Length: 435
Image 1 (tube, rainbow, N blue to C red):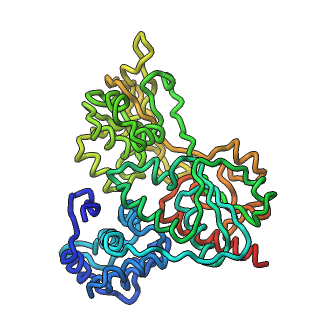
Image 2 (image 1 turned 180 degrees about the horizontal axis):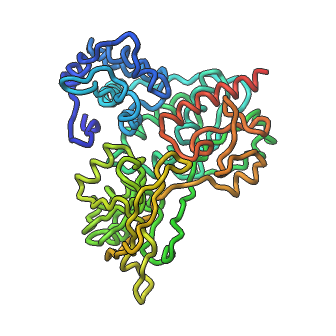
Image 3 (image 1 turned 60 degrees about the horizontal axis):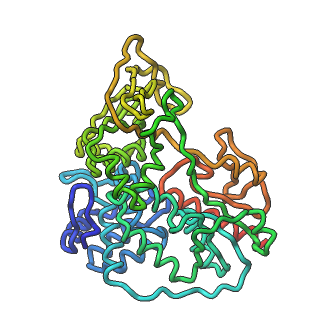
């Protein structure tokens, strides 16, 4: 089961999984369950692994988590279930995520039965976007007997899981196997199809769900951002993901000096991907300290292992080009931390007279992403100040029959949180249509 490789290269074989499972004390309070956004019954599935019932363990996980293999690989467990584990000594917390990905991969290898389609006789629901929230809504409504159709603008389903998370974090065989299992249940996913939510409501769909994510990158806006050799983080990762990392794109990176601006997961993914494409040197520029860095701790550690040079408390001020309009350097300024800002993190302030330059060939801006404001404006729904859609407790927007969840309401969240929001939105759609 090579797909179980994690960042340390560890592979859980059945005996190793059973040993790790025996470390779980199955505590009464189970804080790990409370820390899981979708509420997976962690002690129960680990108990099945203890007994050697690996398929049963996977089935328990799937009662709450639609994509167990995916979540076992990319969930920020350091902030969720593993952090909340009561077991600490002598080996540290139980590696819940590794047990989950083991069970998921074991089921993929050993349980190849065709999924049973559920007859659908109730109203039609259109789902726009096949990311985690859209898939969660589709699956939940399918279970309730609704006829669901998923519309995906890209050529492959999965949303940002497919196009923005590199293979070293999320192997494609795991993602594709779990999406295929969803499709086998009778859920239709129309890829390469753009639709208008309002038109769907007029064409016989009783409700429409929006799971369109945040695909618009945020630029630093500093001078020189338009030079050849400047990439947006998501665009860079899409080039890596869709195979363009082969020539000529791979040749663009190999042997080059790269700077990545940002401190989130996209910045880490871009840095690691550049390293594995053969970049000569990679500088990561982050304007705050390690304590404020939003990236998953394990991703930061992996980037450091790959040789990425971290320039903490450093902010780029301009990108310098050569006579041909290509990037040749980035000017930076040292920062210091002041009082907390609206995000709760200490505000970075420039240090006077601290400017310096780094010679580079490529710069990747990974400072965030946002919703498609033009599309949202066309929908005529209420939004927050950052352009994300305002929703009620069950994903209902200000427009009757239109629901939303995932990044389009949060501005950027985890896969497991999007799954949880999708499940709530499905409940909201069911309530709306039943009434």
